[in-house]
Image (tube, rainbow, N blue to C red):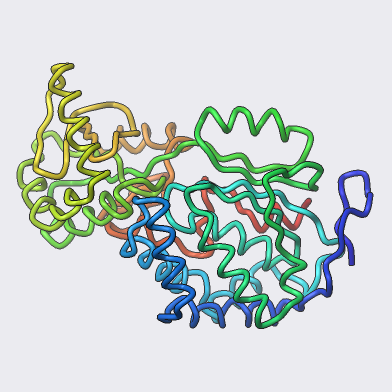
Length: 357
């Protein structure tokens, strides 16, 4: 079986196709490796941190644990594949160029998984910020089955593929859209997670919100960067809980530098804000907040807010709330950084996309 470009030209060959169930077995076997204290894995985690100080061992372990729980469970993978009635092998193996972000560890793993589970070939361009973990995981699967090598290729140049998936900033998304416009593509730009509060949150729920805010230092598109609160909400109570639980985040040098810089910037620009020793809180209409900062906006009528959020759906990655909202999907507080197999970035079903190229 060969991969083909859009003109039907043979470009490369998959060594030997691996049946769907065996691909699932390889992925579930990978789960045991990721949860282990294997020396290679520990060295990779340490090297990732040496090259990118945002990737602390704790954060990388958190990402690896999340991948294991949501993406590498055999039963979940089997149910996911069955939902789409995936065949053992695609009719034609397609080449898919994948440009990955590097804001948090293994942020592009779900896309890689989608390509592999559908039996296509992934041509991968890792971010310089996250270039160690994914190659190690693929190398490990290839140790168990050398034919895995035929499904993955790392490259800086991704020309002439059958389809593309690219994730980046709003500026890079415009470039990607232009560059890949002739090919089937998924182009992702900046999105943010938000939380809608009602003022009745327990301390436990406020701590859960803190995980949505502070996980991975707030660098992920699924981190809450803005909260919507009722007019009579007591912000000082929330700040006290968040500070008591997450104040250790400011001991990280890069986070502390951002906190200090933004604190000074707000002072110089005479921006009104509340602050703990680890978080800056300011009233702002923007969904996107700076590192170490959180925006808030008041609402008077939940129905009006729901209508507003529906109109802003293209800017929102996910919404956490203790209550359901009309016309928008919500997830429980504390779960924004725990996406499942069916939680596709930007709401675009990658499996459907891959089945139709």
